[in-house]
Image (cartoon, rainbow, N blue to C red; front, side):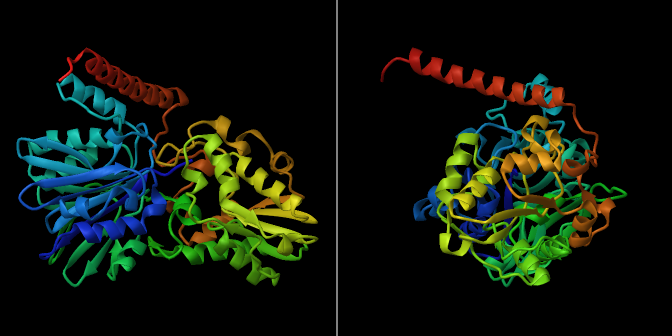
Length: 482
């Protein structure tokens, strides 16, 4: 299960933008650990990107090559597009008017349809990511319109979730989809302005959060301020509930809500009239704020029962089940003295496949826990997400196949309780009609693609990638030695 990415953009008065972008991406590292990239502009667009964490991709030499006071950055985990260098972002496309760099968080549901049209027109793709589809479509619109009108036309044609930062020559632009599914906010420094997936990155750089980018809004940054344009309006918004319960940093403010307080209130709600126990423990780190709230309400001791190795990445966004299971053992160790002989309430953000939860419960039992009661900060996840969280099939979702008691038996706990949908909505503090709850209810803000259509999309991108790989291999074999 994986969110697509974190995006960042900045326009400064005079100094180079590369180092502030680097620090901003560091603050957004939790949103993607697969690759990182930065694009800047002085007299031309410069780009550096690679596979790995931010500090692994960039050193002083690479940052020094990124000249210019304006730029964008990206950290990625793939939902569409394979895990390879060609799919690193920002994506760069040259055209008659200059160059475009684009960093995208989200998932474009109609990307394959748009790509097929563009390919029929003769446009050539070098990646299998839907971000390059957006870039080529934007180039097409820029050949007909001024910059802002072209971006408006682009947004009218995209269907899905997206928060995007653009570097169109020296123009830094941010856009958010008409439903506001993915987060994007605006901040200010003494010498410029910034766009970021989360406010925590603005805090890291000593800036001030101004506000969220509104759904359907285009923001054009300059060192002196920003200009707002509205491209598309919807009667309702559909903010992704998973940002509040898992993906965003607890110290971020998204759409007016401090994430830590949302999670703390969820924990308090879970504790109402609950089981008798001795201690409350979180599954670190995502369960901490929930467990704090639970302990406050229940008046049970908050205890660290699981110690996290923070040099291991988030299991949630690691590709492949084998890697996820190995990461659990690398990542968490039970503090036996805190657990032995105790009735334990363990708090986590969600259960998706159930395999990680089962392994943690087994570890607690082996450490001598008398009872293990699991409490979950989201209702059962029963439907796939088509808008940027990688839950591609019903078969991977344990709650879609089993009752609550069936899940309880599978993960091996004495009791299992999820927060109710009403309790979650109340904790977030937004009306139900302003949230995307598709993975919990099966009701989506846009028309959902069929399972067959989703598989065709993934197959088409994979086939295209295989053809490109075969061509490269064939060329290498047939090329004469130098």
